[in-house]
Length: 153
Image 1 (cartoon, rainbow, N blue to C red):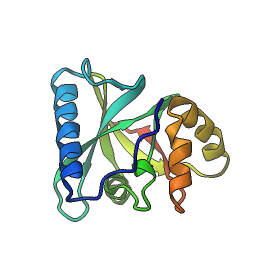
Image 2: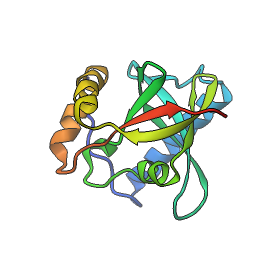
Image 3: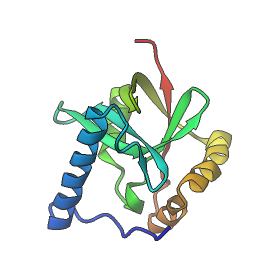
Image 4: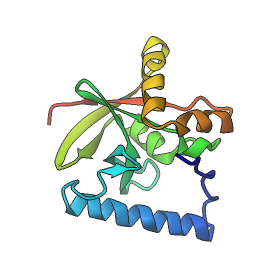
Protein backbone atom coordinates (compact mmCIF):
# COMPACT_ATOMS: atom_id res chain seq x y z
CA UNK A 1 0.00 0.00 0.00
CA UNK A 2 1.63 3.33 -1.01
CA UNK A 3 2.08 5.82 1.80
CA UNK A 4 -0.26 8.80 1.59
CA UNK A 5 1.14 12.31 1.60
CA UNK A 6 0.59 14.53 4.65
CA UNK A 7 -2.81 16.21 4.83
CA UNK A 8 -3.09 19.46 2.89
CA UNK A 9 -3.11 22.73 4.80
CA UNK A 10 -6.63 23.97 5.64
CA UNK A 11 -8.03 26.52 3.20
CA UNK A 12 -5.96 25.32 0.24
CA UNK A 13 -7.47 24.05 -2.98
CA UNK A 14 -6.23 20.53 -2.13
CA UNK A 15 -7.96 20.69 1.26
CA UNK A 16 -11.21 21.89 -0.31
CA UNK A 17 -11.08 19.07 -2.87
CA UNK A 18 -10.38 16.51 -0.12
CA UNK A 19 -13.31 17.84 1.92
CA UNK A 20 -15.59 17.59 -1.12
CA UNK A 21 -14.57 13.97 -1.74
CA UNK A 22 -15.09 13.14 1.95
CA UNK A 23 -18.54 14.74 1.80
CA UNK A 24 -19.51 12.66 -1.24
CA UNK A 25 -18.23 9.51 0.44
CA UNK A 26 -20.20 10.29 3.60
CA UNK A 27 -23.43 10.89 1.65
CA UNK A 28 -23.06 7.67 -0.35
CA UNK A 29 -22.41 5.72 2.85
CA UNK A 30 -25.37 7.29 4.66
CA UNK A 31 -27.88 6.99 1.80
CA UNK A 32 -26.91 3.39 0.97
CA UNK A 33 -27.00 2.23 4.59
CA UNK A 34 -23.29 1.50 4.38
CA UNK A 35 -23.48 -0.66 1.27
CA UNK A 36 -21.34 1.92 -0.55
CA UNK A 37 -18.21 3.32 1.04
CA UNK A 38 -18.03 0.75 3.83
CA UNK A 39 -14.41 -0.07 3.00
CA UNK A 40 -11.50 2.02 1.79
CA UNK A 41 -8.40 0.17 0.59
CA UNK A 42 -9.87 -2.92 2.28
CA UNK A 43 -10.16 -1.18 5.67
CA UNK A 44 -13.62 -0.86 7.28
CA UNK A 45 -15.10 2.62 7.58
CA UNK A 46 -17.68 3.98 10.01
CA UNK A 47 -19.39 7.36 10.18
CA UNK A 48 -18.87 9.28 13.42
CA UNK A 49 -21.48 11.88 14.29
CA UNK A 50 -20.32 14.53 16.75
CA UNK A 51 -21.19 18.11 17.72
CA UNK A 52 -18.73 20.96 17.17
CA UNK A 53 -17.52 22.18 20.56
CA UNK A 54 -17.32 25.78 19.32
CA UNK A 55 -20.00 25.91 16.62
CA UNK A 56 -22.57 23.56 18.15
CA UNK A 57 -23.13 22.15 14.64
CA UNK A 58 -23.64 18.46 14.03
CA UNK A 59 -20.74 17.01 12.05
CA UNK A 60 -20.05 13.63 10.44
CA UNK A 61 -16.58 12.20 9.92
CA UNK A 62 -15.81 8.92 8.12
CA UNK A 63 -13.09 7.00 9.95
CA UNK A 64 -11.30 3.68 9.73
CA UNK A 65 -12.09 1.43 12.67
CA UNK A 66 -11.20 -1.80 14.39
CA UNK A 67 -13.74 -4.06 16.10
CA UNK A 68 -12.75 -4.99 19.66
CA UNK A 69 -15.56 -7.04 21.14
CA UNK A 70 -18.58 -4.75 21.48
CA UNK A 71 -16.37 -1.68 21.22
CA UNK A 72 -15.01 -0.02 18.12
CA UNK A 73 -11.56 1.55 18.10
CA UNK A 74 -10.61 4.63 16.07
CA UNK A 75 -7.36 6.54 15.70
CA UNK A 76 -6.85 10.32 15.86
CA UNK A 77 -3.91 10.31 13.45
CA UNK A 78 -4.88 13.17 11.14
CA UNK A 79 -2.34 11.75 8.71
CA UNK A 80 0.49 12.34 11.18
CA UNK A 81 -0.25 16.05 11.54
CA UNK A 82 0.96 17.83 14.68
CA UNK A 83 -2.64 18.95 15.24
CA UNK A 84 -5.19 16.84 17.05
CA UNK A 85 -8.24 16.13 14.85
CA UNK A 86 -11.18 18.43 15.62
CA UNK A 87 -13.55 15.45 15.67
CA UNK A 88 -11.64 13.98 18.63
CA UNK A 89 -11.71 17.27 20.54
CA UNK A 90 -15.45 17.54 19.85
CA UNK A 91 -16.15 13.97 20.90
CA UNK A 92 -13.96 14.18 24.00
CA UNK A 93 -15.60 17.39 25.18
CA UNK A 94 -19.15 16.14 24.51
CA UNK A 95 -18.49 12.77 26.13
CA UNK A 96 -20.72 11.01 23.63
CA UNK A 97 -21.50 10.65 19.96
CA UNK A 98 -23.05 8.27 17.48
CA UNK A 99 -21.56 5.91 14.94
CA UNK A 100 -23.00 4.28 11.86
CA UNK A 101 -21.39 0.96 11.05
CA UNK A 102 -22.92 -0.28 7.83
CA UNK A 103 -26.67 0.12 8.32
CA UNK A 104 -26.51 0.07 12.14
CA UNK A 105 -26.45 3.25 14.20
CA UNK A 106 -25.48 3.30 17.86
CA UNK A 107 -24.72 5.77 20.61
CA UNK A 108 -21.18 5.63 21.94
CA UNK A 109 -19.08 7.00 24.77
CA UNK A 110 -15.40 7.69 23.93
CA UNK A 111 -12.42 6.99 26.11
CA UNK A 112 -8.71 7.17 25.46
CA UNK A 113 -6.89 3.83 25.40
CA UNK A 114 -3.83 3.99 27.61
CA UNK A 115 -1.15 1.72 29.01
CA UNK A 116 -1.62 -1.99 28.41
CA UNK A 117 -4.83 -1.48 26.46
CA UNK A 118 -3.13 0.89 24.02
CA UNK A 119 -0.15 -1.48 23.76
CA UNK A 120 -2.55 -4.32 22.90
CA UNK A 121 -4.53 -2.31 20.34
CA UNK A 122 -1.74 -0.46 18.48
CA UNK A 123 -0.26 -3.52 16.70
CA UNK A 124 -3.76 -4.60 15.63
CA UNK A 125 -4.43 -1.11 14.25
CA UNK A 126 -1.13 -1.10 12.34
CA UNK A 127 -1.94 -4.56 10.94
CA UNK A 128 -5.27 -3.13 9.77
CA UNK A 129 -3.72 0.02 8.28
CA UNK A 130 0.11 0.01 8.15
CA UNK A 131 0.33 3.76 7.49
CA UNK A 132 -0.48 4.40 11.16
CA UNK A 133 3.17 3.56 11.87
CA UNK A 134 4.25 6.09 9.24
CA UNK A 135 1.95 8.71 10.75
CA UNK A 136 3.54 8.12 14.14
CA UNK A 137 6.92 9.17 12.69
CA UNK A 138 5.51 12.42 11.28
CA UNK A 139 4.50 13.96 14.59
CA UNK A 140 5.80 14.56 18.10
CA UNK A 141 2.36 14.09 19.67
CA UNK A 142 1.13 10.71 20.80
CA UNK A 143 -1.54 9.69 18.33
CA UNK A 144 -4.73 9.03 20.29
CA UNK A 145 -6.30 5.58 20.20
CA UNK A 146 -9.96 6.02 21.08
CA UNK A 147 -12.28 3.28 22.27
CA UNK A 148 -15.96 3.86 21.53
CA UNK A 149 -18.12 1.97 23.99
CA UNK A 150 -21.81 1.41 23.18
CA UNK A 151 -24.29 3.13 25.47
CA UNK A 152 -27.97 2.53 26.08
CA UNK A 153 -30.25 4.66 23.93
